[in-house]
Image 1 (cartoon, rainbow, N blue to C red):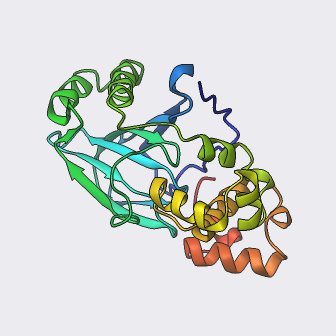
Image 2 (cartoon, rainbow, N blue to C red):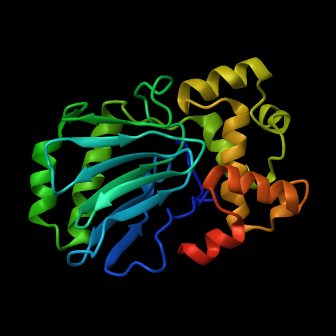
Length: 254
């Protein structure tokens, strides 16, 4: 069995500090799903907001399966992206989701990286049916997690989500990777093999995947561990988020 120690811990998406009455929580999966799922999460408003809420989604190479409990007919598969996305969610909303580790989703990725797919069915899982259950327990995230766990187990049984040994190794050693050559050597693949494998399981080129890992790791460690100097870090951070690191820390919960 592939065991993924949780050494890769993606940064939470940005919620502006000035916005109140928006509630976010995430919980770790049971141990049998830890090679597949980073977390289960809930994002909702507590009352009507005075203006539309803009959610600053940072790149982490994960796939999110998003259930909108206000529109329960379709789920949204949020695919990976290399720069931040700003989503306008309106003044009232309630979402729950499953954040899958990079590389475990077995749907098509090469034409939809940086976008999303809306679907009424995932494998044999009926979105409308599962949303009814989630809505019934919408005030109890613990009960919702039981439903989400069952969904993932069904998708795993149908091979819609499958752990990838090379990706597990890369994620477990993300904090040590400095170059694409490091990544290639770690998984004992030629650059061409690595290119093909990463494109297939993440939708990213090795360079773009490393850029996302480097960005994510910079939140938890000193930037000089991943960037040549302060100027390189600031330039890369601004290119990904639209903000300098200082501006981002002032504006968003991090």
